[in-house]
Length: 477
Image 1 (cartoon, rainbow, N blue to C red):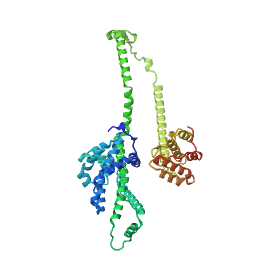
Image 2: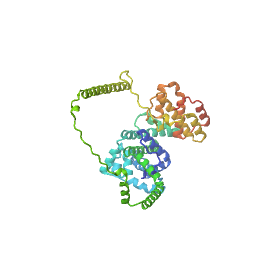
Image 3: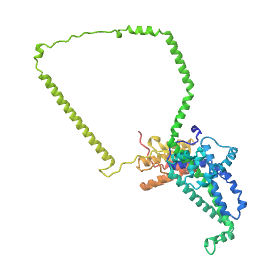
Image 4: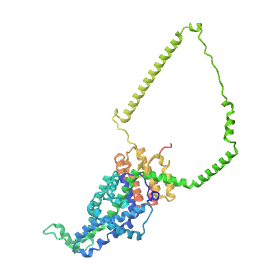
């Protein structure tokens, strides 16, 4: 594993950002992950002809075995993150190991563990066992423990909800006679007998929904794992030093050549100079090294000097002492005044006298986007139009969105947190400035379509956005 080969920006993220980065990795390789997921389920699919009359038992085995499919998805995502795209031949070789590796522990003892999104990553990628495994898990779970449990809960609810939608959709396309007979199951009259066809429709819906959720949950767990190690081990700092070392290594030859030339030059100059002993003797002859001696004779006090009064000297000492005390008192008063002023400033900042709360620091990064005034051009609209004309349409749309967020934070004073999503930003603006929500809502919708669905606005929509741009540009610094 080489950090310099990563295909994603490595930086400390919040839990929600880490989950979103995992979703992005799963989206990038979705179809390959989907095929790998079903490759791991081939043994269970082979049981269908043998269990035609036992759909409930088959789906239980299906859900129990799908952990091996998560292993294959994790194998693909982890290798792709570090710059390696496994070949299909290598994936087929990995498949039997995914079926049998730590079978008893993972498939029997801890199969229902709610920490599976993280523990699976630690087992598969680090291969730790026993005390080392427990120590690593305690370290990794320092961040995102609640998010891991929430992911497990969401995966269960998501599979059930999606399976219900697929089942109802399937019932719409079956013949009317069969649909009417199945509808009698919901009457709850007499003894409930579930037809085998209806049971297989439900089971098939559940089987089709499972990979659609499991692939993204596996990616989210992997994203949380990468984020936790980034926070604890400083991967972003390590990457920065490695990039610096790579840049310096390119100039190493030039530096060595320069040092070599300097050494040769210095050596030749020293050879031409005189010997050290001669140099020392020459220096010692300088006037600065000649020793000069002076003799002083102590004068005895005369009778006239002893008869002089000492009062003036004593009076001067008393005067200087009084001045010193005055200066010391002034310094003490100044220090007391400074302390009082600092206390007053602290009270005014905390709002203890007026009842106002201390202003929270303004967000600098929202959803990974820089929204500070310093990170934006002075003329946001002109810069965005230039990007659009150059073909960088997503960057142009993102610049407008960043500019609007910066305006809401710095000019309108809306408290937008760094962990807010697009929907959270809309709700905060609606609470404070509902009359100005129209343009921002349209811009947010177009930005989300472009960023998450790669559906960029048409030329006419872009021109309307530019013409209706309502935000005042920031002042020149």
